[in-house]
Image 1 (cartoon, rainbow, N blue to C red):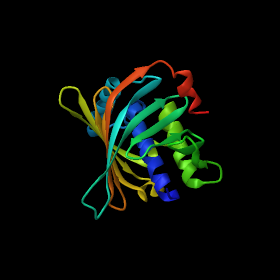
Image 2 (cartoon, rainbow, N blue to C red; image 1 turned 60 degrees about the horizontal axis):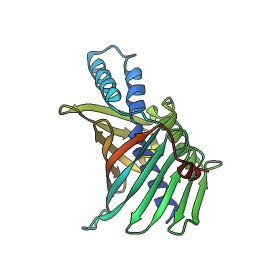
Image 3 (cartoon, helix red, strand yellow; image 1 turned 90 degrees about the vertical axis):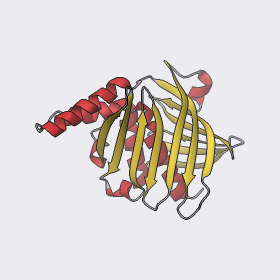
Image 4 (cartoon, helix red, strand yellow; image 1 turned 180 degrees about the vertical axis):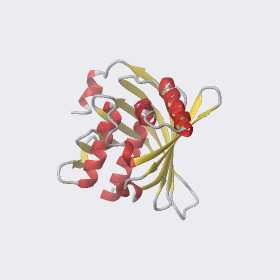
Length: 226
């Protein structure tokens, strides 16, 4: 895995942390409340409604199916596995097929392991501007501090059907724009699907399957973030 593709995968995972997007919606809602025009009031109401619908559990687990369509190729690359989001620790993304691997993302580092559990690549945030942006975004998403994240995206929020919602995140940060043109999320109590349109024309679609919540990690799960 090249450093570029590794970083793109990492940014994708940070977008995936939209599983905790209730904080994003609520923070953007508070920001929008400071505006006075009617359009902004309507947007604020929509963000607040999305925030109220989403689960804000300490731990969320589930399965995923990811389809990555490379520009110029007809057949998508399909992978499947499980994800684990722990608000106080980070995100573990485990691919089971077609090739087993795992990626653990925390505010300070990203670690890739092979099928044998051995570390294949480790990247720390110190001294790396791209990693610093990723770390700041992760911290903001997991801790609910969006003062550093929200200026990097414009947010379009809308309700869909009885219980559904959708968010479109358009990067305003030049560094993020070099990787992504836009990120779309949709769901109900949980984020159910994510689409990431990359600046180079590739498109990644992620379907989150059977998400569930719990108050804490198991001992084995906690070890994955050490």
